[in-house]
Length: 112
Image (tube, rainbow, N blue to C red; front, top):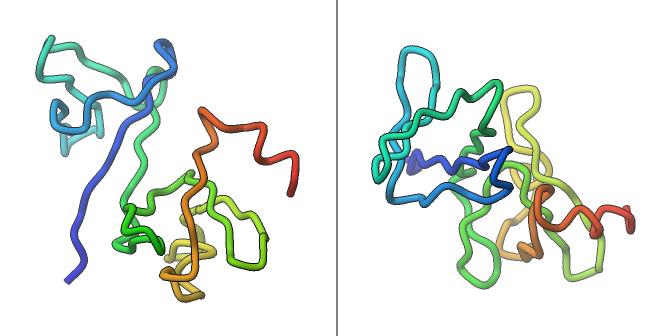
């Protein structure tokens, strides 16, 4: 069984919310930052990104919106589409390397 994990990108602060300090409201998906009890509305203030259940060749967790590179230097953005995570669901994740994410490393997407 795959581990279910999420991370949250704070759109206003432009940083990830501390992964160990969040809770997700199951009724509406709002992210609550436990340290400061700040509520981040997912649609307006936060982007939730789900763990794919896979790790890259360095043992790094692969999440939605990560930018990954193959050993052949092809670069892809991990997206959930049609019931699966693309492209890592189709290929052997151990051949991939997480090189960034769409929020902090958008410049890497210029190579696509």
